Image 1 (cartoon, rainbow over the protein chains, first blue to last red):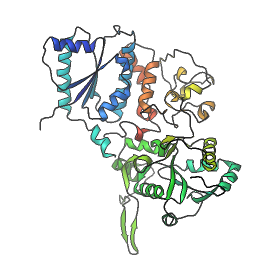
Image 2 (image 1 turned 120 degrees about the horizontal axis):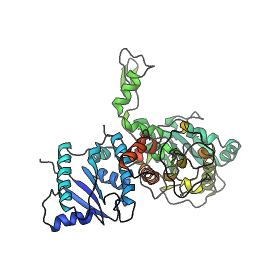
Image 3 (image 1 turned 135 degrees about the vertical axis):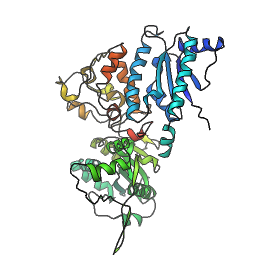
Image 4 (image 1 turned 180 degrees about the horizontal axis):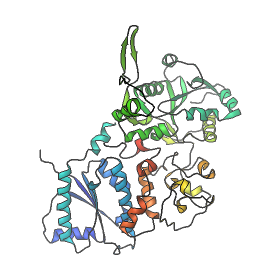
Length: 141
Length: 324
């Protein structure tokens, strides 16, 4: 059966979600594998959210926020940047390919970039194949 | 569960543990007399010669309280946990290992094959020319010898049997044990089943007496031996990873008052799902840089982030074990 990856995308309300919306209202076509979750700020995305997404079967997790310096709350995206780095280090140690977690900045006007990002990330995840995290965690029960 | 004017039956057992929890019970010193005045010790392998069969012969629910320390590493741990659950009215997960996996839980970075390879073949002190490994069943002239089955992963006590209470700590602070024990024997109303007992529900930092500033700004992380601790400033502010923000209180800051950073043995507060994730959040808030490359460099100074943030809690975390 063809592998259809599940990708969870955390999008910040002010830039990235609006950017994704722009892709939609501009009728751009992109891969349907992304499940968008709107959060108020990329700084709101706790590492727990990302780990839970993986545990519940996400093959990839995408985090999008305002470009550095453009955060609606001034510094939220910098916090996100640091959490992302720690998460990358952590998941690599747990044997999870760190390319399954991606951070990208998408502004409200970058609908096209969002569509391209979703396409390229979906492609990356298809190449990596299904994530074994859910299966591994469930086997322990 | 109160029995006025009569003693309660107390059992203590260990799974995958170092034995420190059993010893922590002896640390009650002269209060041991109060304990034996209030309880019959019906099973405690570290101190008393009582066999498995004696436990099997007990009627169900015969033991009032069992303090089970240690994680579930092999089939013997699991069998005894199941047996003691059946024989006990209250089963308490005692100590970090049964609560969250503890230090034995760090074995979840490896699997059974990797551990056996290291222990029975590769370790520097091992000479094993015939490449002998333990097997669960072995036939000799006298009959069949059995060993417990070693599992691939370490699990928590609550994943094997229903647990009434959790008492965290590596080992739990002896004063807390006495408080909990006295509460049980006095017949005081106990918290709802499934609660963590013998610990606070505030983060260590809230009660820590070291000097703290509002805006911590870290530009470099150090291993504890790389800096000279001034004995009074917050460890995190000095750049040493201290698990205080993601650890509940109750231990009396034994490590911090001894000039050691908190390692997180008491586990997270009740509103936290994953202590390591909480710690990553906390650390990310403290790093003083907005440059991606500099951030990477600062954070790469934390050696073994998974082992540091989940030192006592790997099997209880969201991801639970390494995938490789």
